[in-house]
Image: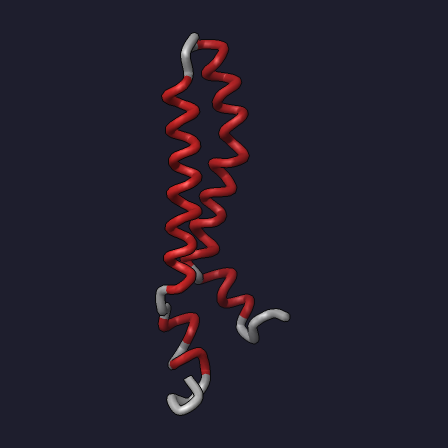
Length: 84
């Protein structure tokens, strides 16, 4: 079941933005490793950097998901304080 303001969440939530960055790094990792493998004999550091970057973006997205964002959540996610 979707949240009532799913369009706003997709546009404004930092967790969605960070997961998109992690996805970009995950998709680009094999491409960059292939290109770097043809130019640089040992591309271990490039592999490590890409893996660390995608992991950090994913971890940051988890943190961003639980942090209160007023423009998306409103006041206690649209509930009165007694229900929150």
